[in-house]
Image (cartoon, rainbow, N blue to C red; front, side, top):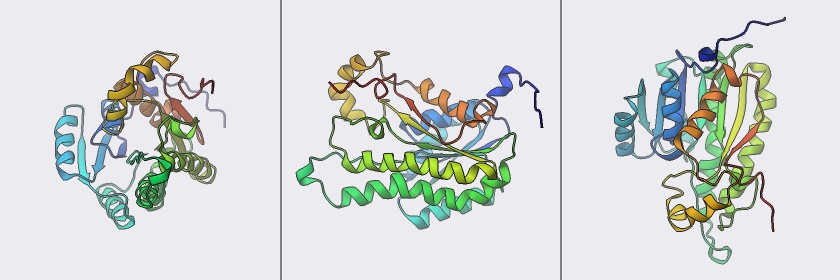
Length: 267
């Protein structure tokens, strides 16, 4: 059983020949991840609700590698099924699933509406589960004991510490996703599929734009590393988790936040 073969450094992070799906991959953190996977050699499918955004992302990302964009509204169960079928029609195996599509709803407690729960929980928590369910045959087919298939769920530091903004359904859905990550990790590990979560801090994206315009400098000033997240920070963690380098991690939630949540003082 002793596998003491050492992998050369470039091969540790090489994704050549791998197939990946990145949901919500047409902008923000999803695009950062898609670019990283492409540059490491993977074939990547990105999805988003917006057909125009898909076309634009495919144009923009194609300079980095073999990319395809498929419009799908993943807040709906039937659309998750449809996307999974399209992925599996193209290739019987899927090496990397990145569940990144997400929604945020900020509103004070008194007026926080019912639909702010359904819209956010459906996309942030149910959709990753539905996609894992539908794509499990392809993930199982891709995974081996030495090189498991990878599921990467994009959580949030809002599920690790308490953010200042009133995001009740968002924080709760992401905490649910962190726990779902651990539950699935235990079940799927013996089937050669790892399940990990990345909990981003503040990265430039459309979801964060209003916040960063208003208080971006204060947020950066509070981070131990004194800055916001950059594209390479997100590309790097995704490539690490998807490659040979991350093959022995499962059930983890990794905050990529410049230390904001992990060093919060609460004073």
